Length: 153
Image (cartoon, rainbow, N blue to C red; front, side, top):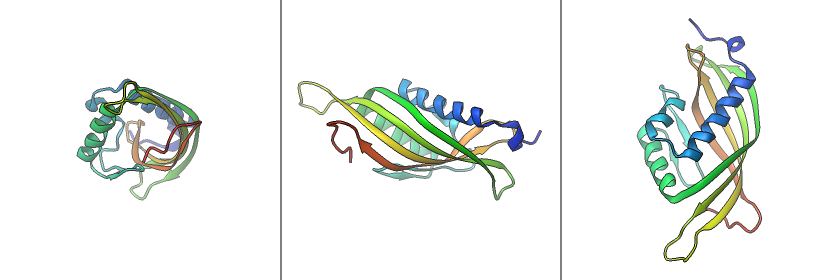
């Protein structure tokens, strides 16, 4: 069965985005994270690093899940625009705006700190033959501290 844009809806992509953040908030095992990724290649651009391999993303994931806790992501926007892909596979460009709240402890501070950011992101999501969306590219365009939260990087 070949996937087509008509078989995958805007709502399915938006739910996929929401599910991604639920997985990040839960700090799921990395084997579960991989299910969200395009098997043919990825590119994640974060303020602190760019990764283009599954192993590189695992290193990033291990770092952030050991640094940040009590995470809560709220998707404020997930605008979907379907587009064809050069490989003939269906794809979607997604503009994501997410509010990210987290706690961090910086030893030897006596208490953890609560942080909050608004993150503006551009995603490219491929839609496989099985109709499931997968992240091909994920770019953090801007990470804006909220309230008295300091810059992260």
